[in-house]
Image 1 (cartoon, rainbow, N blue to C red):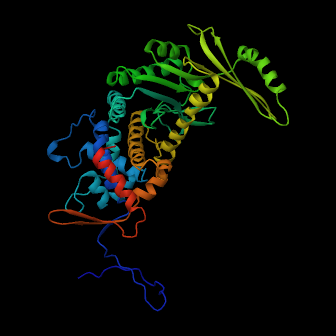
Image 2: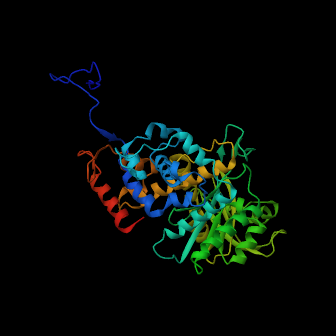
Image 3: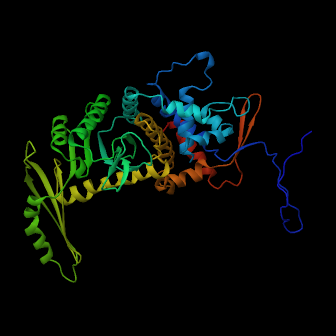
Length: 444
């Protein structure tokens, strides 16, 4: 007979001794994974990731399907376990086993880290293309009905590396060796559309136009009549991009880098703004619209100048758009709203750790990036399931994770059912019930 282990030497509380033994049964600190499981199943995330992969294994020896492995990896990332080797400590966790679809006690333990690593290195570039297109399809399927208009915010970010990874380059702007992945988000809903790993350098106009061509055509395949607005900073304004957006019938509002000619045009406006300043009015802002045609452009475009004078000096910014309306509205209400995309990228990097791209092969790192996009889908959908007027709608992913995923649970597997016991003192039980009801009845 084996004695139950205990923690020795605990100080008493008042006149009562304090004992702690390891006999509570099957417990997990990630009870909210069972809610994320419902999101993953309804979105079909694991299927999107693994359907393009060819499974050449002997079926009689397969213990872990590709879908199980991808689901486990995305759920772990969403729960805060972004390292692949974390699975070695979690493979027997009852909540994670349930989330992957295995019985907590009678079901076999989950896969090991080497097994997951083999999955990450399995995809070739053709499979990655199909996964990327599948993620655009997933974005379209996530709407209950076709929208009249979508806003595509395109931006890039630095992904520092510390090894000999393929595609890694030194970037002088970021002052590091890095990748520079491109992210495309829906600017209205915050849903991810596509994330592409690419070399650590500024994208060319031809590359941007090619990416947008694939995204726009795939969206129009689902919604032929949808209106599409593309927003981006001056990185993404190029003759190739403008020509494609015109040909595709898309609206656009893009930043325009300042040059000598634009400085000459704006010079009198800057003087005018500065002359209108006064102690009572220290800041003056004006907007001007004018047609402009750079030598490399195939046609003249509408340019909006935002001119500003403050006690710190004068400043001017330019954007290019084919939208109708006042310059002030287009700049402040439409173009500046693209700054939300930077916050979404921060959510992706900070809270799903999408910069965990330490594999040598770029294909493996791109596959990892797709897995992190899947984890973003899980947390984003969980947050959106909260009631509209609740404070959780504006919470960070870390807050959502700590409140609704990192929940203690005792798991008991009986003959005819599996019973989950959550803490009676859990303060957000009513909100978790409401969120789970929204997910399981109406779907994400």
